[in-house]
Amino acid sequence: MGKKEQAIPQFIPSALNTPMLNYKVYIMNIKEKIGTFLLAFIAGGAVGLVFYGGQFRDSEGLATSATTISNIIIFSFVGLVVAKFYFPIRTKQLLDKRKQELTRQFQSFLEALAISLSSGMNMQDSLVSTYNDLKVEYADDAYMSREVQEMLNGLNNNITIEALLISLGERSEIDDIRNFGIVFSIAYRAGGNLKDIVRRTNDILNEKIEISAEIETAITSNKSQFLAMMCIPVILMVMMRTMSSAFAASFATIPGVIAVTIAIAMFAAAFNLGQRIMDIKG
Image (cartoon, rainbow, N blue to C red; front, side, top):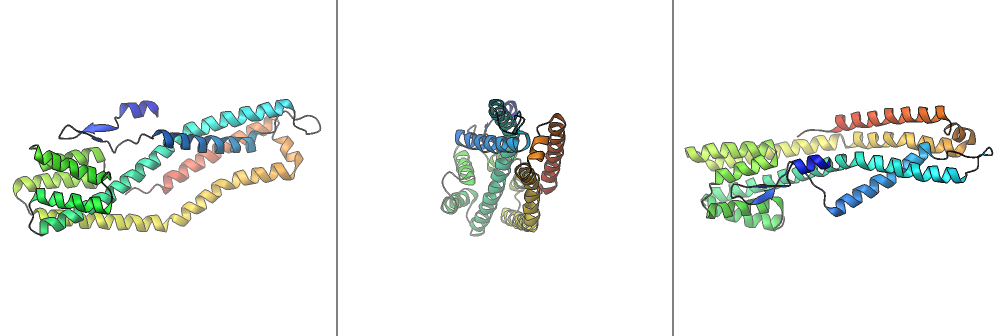
């Protein structure tokens, strides 16, 4: 994942040649990296002990020094492996969340821009009004607040609004924003009705957001059931280890370790498949 992050820059020059956020990639800050690592490491290490812990007990089933050492090794190794595989998953979650927020803010941008254009303002004045509305609704450092500020700076430096919108569309990797930039560019040059284009795009985007929200609500219970089912193997393993010393001893044998490893592989495959099924594209 590190090589991929280095290959895709976090900031891309805009049409004004200002480094602007690249929405195609998410690079965690230090706090997010530490939090993600600790969560994955501790959870992974604990699960590793549930499945592989308690090795090298004596004939009476009591823990030995080798048991303690092996538990530490298992906890550390499994924790590191889980952290390595969880980082890309968490990064994608944060990337998707940011794109959803950008889409929501872009919808607010279109709504405010449509109102300003309908009141008879020219494009630059409409952008100023829209920028003020976005600062009130979100914040000065919100995604679209920064983007509209960049548009205003570009217009003040003789950069066309079409180029600025297309730049946003390319950096966002969101089809609705990219398509709006293309359509707006064509209509702006041809003298089309910008008010209708902005309003129609806003209506379409709003409908898509509502449909996505309805789909997400409909599958929320399924996601909860899926997560609960993913916890069942761990719970069953804890119960078998704690309720029967014979079961616990069998897991410390070579066949037991092999069986547990195969079960974990099947469990991981099922989890990956479930994540793909639950991943609803907008």
